[in-house]
Image (cartoon, rainbow, N blue to C red; front, top):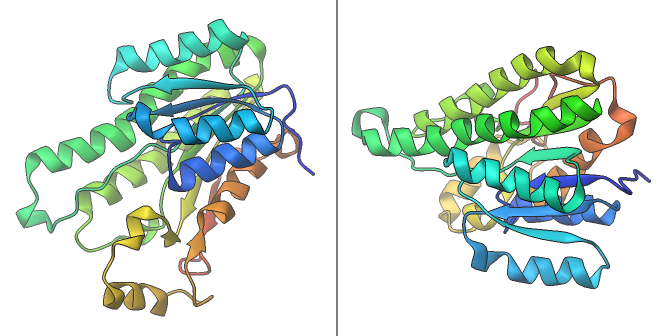
Length: 248
């Protein structure tokens, strides 16, 4: 079993879905958890569950589009535990529409949260990781960043940008024993997909060779794998967790 005993992890967007499943997976492997989310009230149930598991947890209320708030998140974690070993950039939003109908504000909001937020958080944790010469950064991209998707130009662009950012940062910090990888989930059963109309879900399933949606836990296991000491020679990689929907 992969062990993260003694490791400190920050997970953004950790209140629900893939973020929450990732938190539970990392904590289950022994990590101390910096639980970050823009909505603080959404964190209390998960915090209590982590405490019941006997895990140390830090409540971090942060908007990843706010550079100062991101730095505060990192400073608070360092003040509490003295280090940050793992960063999972999971926070993200969607504001879907066709390009010709997409509002400028919706384009900017998605890019700001998904791509800029990933950059801000990555930049903030790197000094401490470089100093300790160890780190794991895992960025949540998406299958649509590789295959495209109608009505999601802003989301696709943000997630494709995350893949490019992942590769660039991986090259910059590789000699410091810091790995930077991305995970590209396919269609995953989360609160975001629960509200989709049945006909849309049926269409989605028709393009998945495995014939089902993935689970947030399956994605979380991918994060756990890339966060572990055993994956020290994997960097700049995009791990596809999509049931065969996209093969590259």
